[in-house]
Image 1 (cartoon, rainbow, N blue to C red):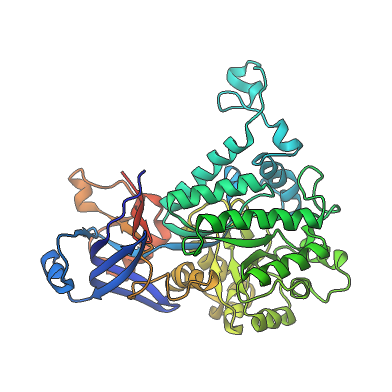
Image 2 (cartoon, rainbow, N blue to C red):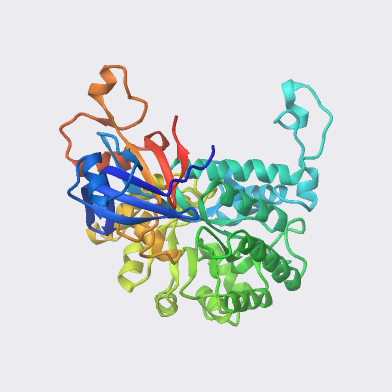
Length: 494
């Protein structure tokens, strides 16, 4: 769809946000959004206005569009997914009985290699009429090569559209080792208007990476990373909407020299970093074997200069107290991926312990270790996993994450982790207008043949805290009516 940009817009109605872990803020009023070069920010707010005419007079603006929230709906800050693998989207929900390391070998590396421009896996991929060539209508067909960048365009277009439809306005994406395919992801995110941090995946360890899917040398790793970084920065020189992020897949996939050079690259160019840490106990033991001179998994990254205040560490389930202290000292961030952790049997991340230690924590879907691109699902799973963690710790309720705290992690927590604190995640003046419009169904309108198209039924006696609870536990993309990023309409449900 075409991106629509107005110089000024007024948004009128109910605004709900979670500015603190125990603070669900529900307000009615009006917000004036002003856009300059497509970057829409909140210019003024009023929490007393109740009508369009009143808003126009108060903000002293001319004939600008006024957008009303639904009677049984609200505006909510866009979700920030701080850990998602864009090329893995076709495998969402496909993981069998595997755990992390065998899942990578069986499902992930072959798929990622096919979404690129080189390598045997990409060269051997075949389709006919959208199905495997040998299976169309049960009849054999002549095999033909997939044009790899065509596959990249298809997958990346779909994952961006799908995440936007679920209200994800910002995503920190892992791509593949292919520079051209990574650049396709950047091009599409920029065109479609999603705020995105995009990293060309770096992996070159000959003992742990398949021959068909790895860089040959540290020189190739660094050279390809730079090539993709410069492409992304050329698209958005200021980095407000689109920015590169240095992306070593995880310590076992990289040679020590490559990790160190990537750390230096991030420092020299003042770039964000994203990687995995302590997701799986087998992975932790593998790191000990591969890096015997380092004290811990976190020490591997710290020694390489990769633990910075602009680093996002995904999972962080099995950290020692010393590792937590190191991460606190370096001010690195954690992306909690509860659905993936449960799906792959990786364990329970002790989120409360990390927060109490002073670590900024956010939420990620980790598609396709996670089965859904929905950040609402990540909020739900964060709540559920926290209760299981409390149970195995003697029933202590201190571990519990409630709905409000889950929403805070998905918005304000995400903003902190991507370095956008104070600019994303709320409705304060000066913030970017990265917002989703939520609509719930009430049974009265459904009885009249209107609505009843979504999964959340409102009977009318619920207060607004209860309606938010019902949205979190039952909602999906059908409740997301419209989505804006920087004031630009990037998704509308028809």
